[in-house]
Image (tube, rainbow over all chains, first blue to last red; front, side, top):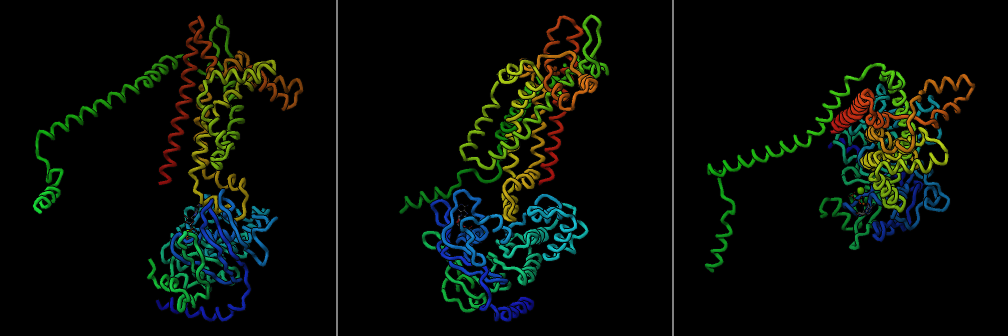
Length: 276
Length: 324
Ligand SMILES: Nc1ncnc2c1ncn2[C@@H]1O[C@H](COP(=O)(O)OP(=O)(O)OP(=O)(O)O)[C@@H](O)[C@H]1O
Ligand SMILES: [Mg+2]
């Protein structure tokens, strides 16, 4: 509790520079359809460079859908369709001639359940760089070590790089997946409930890691855990389902404001746990 | 008022009797029924197993007597001379199976991949339907087909024609088992790869296939066992060849200065023999020694097929144990 308080206290310092920060990604009137069903409706949301943005809201309101629109994962779903505008550094991601491979390299993703490949730790991490033609052993070794250090996992696995990644604990696997996302040197990392399958200790480790990564990466995290959103994020977007079941964003602000002085009554109810 | 009270009290009555049932009689009947049913299922199971046991025991008893080293290493001798072996048929079966594997494994895996990935596209549905139908086509028709497309145009019976026919037999098994395994690979693995920017084909090759590999290998092994046991597709395709010997073809090829490719052509395009086909021919031979050799072949084929099946079972069991 003391620790958490201490961490909360560090936020304002970070946020004092926030308003001046650069907008890394911008969604404008972004809608996603699954067939005829509109899952999210006209979401307008800035993602600030080298800050952590949390997306919160009740189950089914379209948080994952929004997140997956950010790196074009919907391209994989046959009847999914995206409308509206989404930019990365001002460039439209859904524009003509944009290579989806490029989008996914620059915008990495970590999933709800750790999903290491059934290969060695090393091969999991070398997979991404190899995709982009890095095959020299020395370079790969460097990248593997760097990303493992970046994900605070190096000390735990340095002696077993060539053992199966599936032998790691759940928390280690998730940090491996974060490391794997880092190997291709993305600018933005999307995380969809990255701690929901982990125990509290592993969760704290990932949160520490996120704060660490924040220095170099832009992070967007979906979470159901209000304390987590409050602990790690700089900005928070609150989503809700409309009566037609389309999700919309009802409020976006500094995390501090969302949790202490929300404008929307529904946000207040949700973050204080009075919702549903 | 009282009617309502009555119905309510009736409703409160438990439908099934409460407490332990002590009636001796009921207990008895149940036990007897149970025993009778158990006896009956056991009897039927035994009944179903009888043919398998019988065939196995009979083949082993009859065939084992005629198996010796010569049987595996020698070409057939003339009936008058006696002795000899079936090395031609063994070589032929191996070559035919290799040809069949070369065709059916890549084709089967690709088809399975397509069906698993795009089950609801038109092509996906067609491929799926075609494999189902193929699995039910009598194998002799497949032999005729290979005769039509290879033996006639090439003007010769050949290991190739036999291999193609067997590959068609093997295909449905490989497609089905591979498809099932690919479907079992969690979606999250695919997404993990695609989120790194990997293209579809690379995801399949480097992530999905290895994850499904054990199952795919199982399917391939079963398909091989099936292919080795086939006779009908070979009747019209390989002709039979008492002199087929890989060593001789290679030796004479090297001596006459042929390139490796030419030697391979010779191996693949010559008429050849196969264990099952030889067995079929020998079993109808008037000479008793031939019939005895047919039994020996039967034993070899049976042991192979049984062995592959048992091995596959063992592998599958281990995999399932490892997973849980
Ligand atoms: N592939 C899909 N096809 C059709 N509908 C989908 C698909 N994925 C999600 N949906 C629907 O879109 C809506 C939003 O789903 P989404 O997964 O984005 O919600 P969420 O906010 O992430 O929920 P949770 O908190 O439970 O993860 C839901 O009604 C869901 O049923
Ligand atoms: Mg979700």
